[in-house]
Length: 190
Image (cartoon, rainbow, N blue to C red; front, side, top):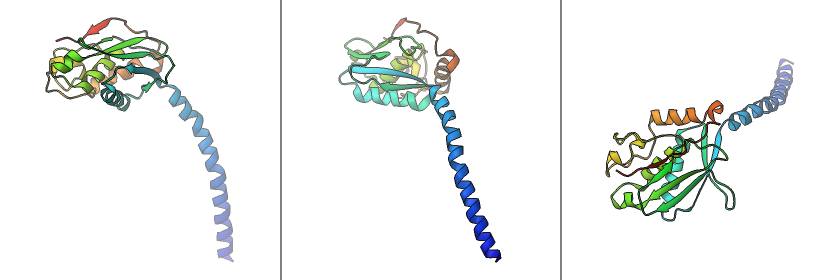
């Protein structure tokens, strides 16, 4: 008889656990949606940046992996993007942000820097960093993404450091997400 009671109780307990588990999942869902809503999504259009696609994708991936308050996504064809990325023959330059949803910022990925020996992925990540609100930190070491060309042509670091990540995260925290872009154009010539 004790086995039967135990089996019945175990079966009843399992039913209770199963009945409670979905409710916990349902209760967690709104909080997950709320956390996801706190992320600022910015769209970029690189359709006019032929030859830079891999560098842009890597630079965007580095920012997305580094900062949780803002997410960069490629704009679908025919949709408006906050960040316009184009290839040019001059020096790289970008609009100083932080750009916000519905705003406008521009990145010019200049081939002159590549001709001089600078890394394409570092250039792309650096210029996107300007759109996200970071100015240059020249001169600076290779460990600072925003040191740009002052780190030299041997520098291949395309990942923001802890200070750069923290600044961008703060710019896109929910309460500050409405801060408009600075709008100045930063030219990254040496």
